[in-house]
Length: 337
Image (cartoon, rainbow, N blue to C red; front, side, top):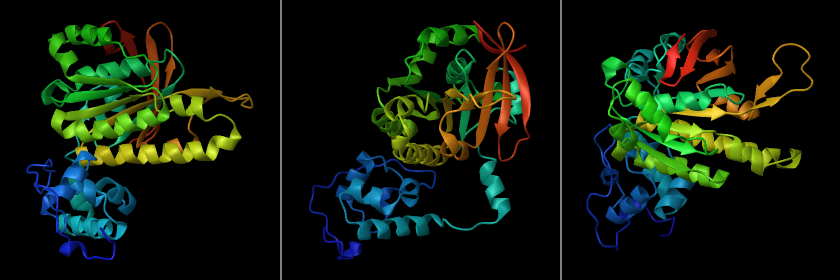
């Protein structure tokens, strides 16, 4: 289509396809937007833009590529979506109401839940970084089980999506944790969708697919274990640093946008590196630099203590104070000491 043509005058020539999208929280469908007929709507839905909310927060370039339309047309569609949803400034009291709709997922430890203000929060990214055997992956497994519990038990009665970049996902651990809580382990396994990412591009693709399938699967938790592993292996040397950080930054912002649109919690783990120039304090630092430091709403540092004990330190949060919590990693899962 010529970009100069007004999108309202565009006529669909492809065969109409009904029920191409999934309604968002607003109850509106993509085809309710002016200029989006069944054919364009189908292409957008196949690319993950299944709701008016998803289109409203998209960039013109992304939407143009997804719908095979011009950027001028994409810009007008995005503007129509934003006008339809009345996206813009709002008073803080209205924003507080929306914030109260965020769900909480228990970690299995009351001390940790208190540190997080009631559990892991939806609509945001939580990052856990630490050395090997610090409990990052064990926490990911426990969250996959806990998300399936009813709200009165700290869950959301939802499913989980697990993107594994290091080959550390173990369904046997889900069975152990589920049986310890008296849950049906077979159902727990069926409610966790897993995929192995083999490089950074594959990781990004899987995460994008996870956000697309989240409404259909009733997924309220996305695990990415770990976020920097492939980036660290593929982009070596200072010459590739700018390209790596730019790619990582875009990836993280897509995760944040998906978390908000789908009202889901995104839990990412991160590796650490040693700082040989650190003469005082802990010489370890998270990988990813400032790009990774700025995007997650909650950042935590995990470190091993005596025996099965682990220490979680809340490093950064926009609404929670810094603090520490001690918990145990047992065969039954994450528990209080």
